[in-house]
Image (cartoon, rainbow, N blue to C red; front, side, top):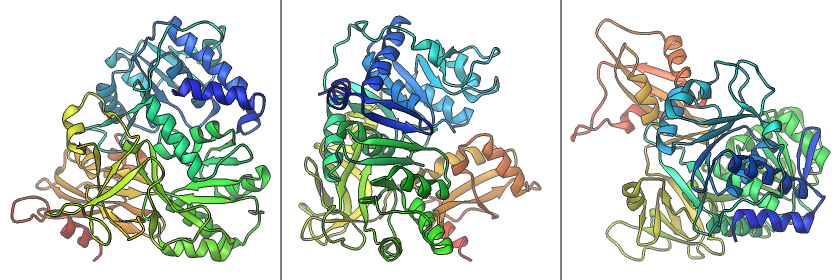
Length: 507
C-alpha cells in the first residue's frame, strides 16, 4: 500500500468525521482527500512529474497536510524542511535536493525563500500567506481551485520515495533520508498499533514539527491512518497546551523530554488548573528521558510517561514501552513488531544482553540517503542500520540508550551537529578556530557552548557573535555560552579534544 491509498482508505472509512482541527478550522477525512487531490492535479498541470522534488517549508497546519498528500499524489517527492532555516542553511539543502517548486508562507519580499529562489531555478512558489503584490508566488487557495477528480497518470509503487527528510545532521553537509511509500505505510501501522490508537482517540500536535519524523509519522500520519482526530496547536505555551487538552478531551500527547519538563514545572508552580483525565497516553522520545520526569508525571498527574525510540532513518519509532504494563527505568522498551534490534560490541559477534555497544536496527527503514550511496553504505551494512547510538539490551530485549557516538548535541529535542555552528563561527572575520560542544542544561537537556580562538588583537563581543550566528543559523543552533582560548586542546593525534572543551564549561 502507498500513502495515496492509505488516505483514500481512511476517507472511505471515516468520511465526514473531522480529521484535523486547527484553531477554529477543521477538515474532514473526505475533504482532506479531495483537497489534496486538487493540489496534486494543480502540480501536475504545471509540469510537476513523478520523481520531481517539491520543497515543503510550512509550520504545522492543515495546509501542510493538504500539500504533503498532494505532492505524493502527483508522484513527486516532498522535501520536508524547517521554515526557520536561514539562507545559508537553505542554500545547502536546496543544492542537495534541487526542488522544482516550493510550498511556503511568504509574508514579505525579504523572505528567505525569495532570496534563494533564483539561484536554484525554482520554477514555482505556492504561498499560503495572504496575497502580496510584490511577491512572485501563487496563492494557495487559487492554486487548488481545480477539479479533484482529474486523472493524474502516475503509477506509484511501494518502492517509490514519498519524501526526503533531513537527518538534523550538518545542514552544510546534508543527508536526505529517502522514505519509500511502502515502508512509510508499514511504519505508520506499527506506530499506531504500538499505542493501540484508533478512531476514538484525539491526538494533540504541539511543538513537534510535521517536518520531523515524530511529528510526521507518529503524530500526524498515524492519526489519519487510525481515524483519530488530530488537534494542531501552534506555539509553545504550556498554558495553551493544558487548556487544549481539557477543551478537546485529548487522549494522546507526544513530546520530547524538554516539553514534559515544562509541563511539570508549570504544574509544580501553579498546580493542576485543567482536567487531564482524558489522557490515556503521554509519551516521550528524541532524547534520553530523565527518571525524575517519569516519577514526577506519576506523582503529580497520576499518568505513566511512556518512553519510545526511533531515528529519521527508521521513518518512525522502532521501540516503545508497553502501553499496558510496568515501566523499566531508563528503558525505551523492546522492539516493535516488524523491527529487530541488536547491540554490536567491538571484537565480538552476537552481542546481546548486558553488553554495551552500538545499537543496530533492521526493519521498514529508509531506502538510503538521496544521491549519496557512499553515506548510505556507511550506515547500512548487511541490511542493518548502524545508529551511532550506544545502548544495552536486557535479557527480555528491552533497550537502554546510554549515549551518542556521533558528535552531536540535543537541545529541546532538536539535534544539533557542532560542525554546523563551527562552520559559521569560523566565517566571522575575528575567529581563527572554534570548537562547539553541548553544555548540560536541566530544562533543555543541552545548550550550545562555543570555545573560540580569536585572531591576534581582535576579540568580538558575545552579542556581536550571537547576531552573526542568528543571521546564518536556525535560532536553536546559536551558542548560549562562549569561552575564549589561546588555542584549542588537542588529543595526541591532533584532533580537538571535545571532552576537555566540554569540561571547560563546568568550571
